[in-house]
Image 1 (tube, rainbow, N blue to C red):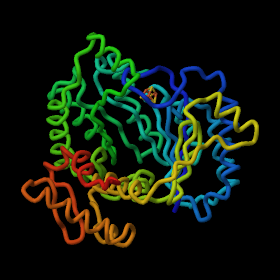
Image 2 (tube, helix red, strand yellow; image 1 turned 60 degrees about the vertical axis):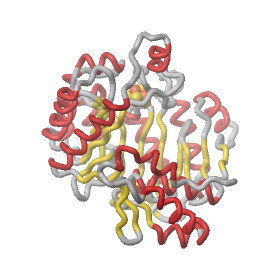
Image 3 (cartoon, rainbow, N blue to C red; image 1 turned 45 degrees about the horizontal axis):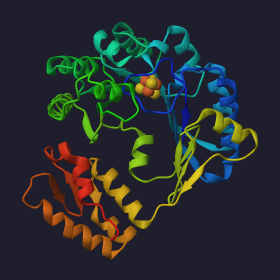
Image 4 (cartoon, protein in one colour; image 1 turned 180 degrees about the horizontal axis):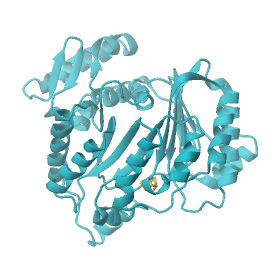
Amino acid sequence: MSGIYIHIPFCKKACYYCDFHFSTSLKYADEMVDAICKEIKMKKDRISGQVGSIYFGGGTPSILSQQALQKIFDTINRTFSVSADAEITIETNPDDLTPQKLKELKQLPVNRFSVGIQSFYNEDLVWMNRAHNAEEAETCIKRSQDAGFENLTLDLIYGYPLLTDAKWLNNINQAVDLQVPHISAYALTVEPRTALAHAIKTKKQIPVSDSQSAAQFVLLMDKLIESGFDHYEISNFAKPNHYAVHNTNYWKGITYLGIGPSAHGFDGQNRYMNPANNAKYIETLESNKLPEVIEELSLQDRFNEYMMTSLRTMWGTDLKKIKTDFGVDFFEETKHNLRNFEDKDWLIFDGDKIKLSQSGKLFADHIASELFIIEE
Ligand code: SF4
């Protein structure tokens, strides 16, 4: 079943490291919601079957009012057939999850929260310039669970200069103790044009250490696997039967609709991308045009993407699928390229599947890129 991703491009504050598309001004929030609804309606023919997942990402979707979110849901329901058991996720920030907001969210068909905790330490949250504090990080989960939201996933960040291994273990333990069924954890990366990149360039901030990130990734894997989580994708850990439907569909190459500024969609062959510009997005839709640009993916592009995404999952890369979907030449070249890994313990060969070993998980992107097929 297809998915729908909706990008809500507003945040209260700009986090130090963030390069997602967002604005800290809500001045045009109403116009944005109208434009999003219009884009949904204009893409009504893009999904023929049922919708199996809806994901509100951003930005900070929980910043929108209940009425605004309801308007988007109403439009989706009038335009598409949403499966009765669809996974419907909304990204939230801890400071938004007040008792009143939870009551409002309960009125919506949302059944999963992704909560941007990042750290349970105040000093770290201040360093990141997050909008929430440590107390809110702690209390929002319990409050959400008490309000009947059990299907929660927490985001954590590791590998930043302030985070000692002891603090990182404590963050992981706190997340586990909160009894959430899903945890996503990301190594801090320094993206160009962020405040963090500027601070490092001007020597106001020390660079991020790869060895620290690698060591903390190992701590993360050990602790979460020991706590009963499946490591089903490099950055994602879930209790059995709690794998994220929406993200798993991305990794499995299932089609999804991308709605909102900077969102991209995939129709099984090509990708569609909207401009990362709120004014341009709204204006284009106001003139009854879709703001997207189409990125035509060659067979090679699709192969390389399949390699990159599948290898990061616990299901691994399927050599049989390579043969049927990409042809014998891609299959033979992949087998040839795999020989470069024979003397390393990074890959596990499991019948027709190639999977990352524990040590290989530390080099996932590098291994995938070595297996890419590049046109001569
Ligand atoms: S809340 Fe999320 S999207 Fe917004 S600035 Fe922070 S990291 Fe970026």
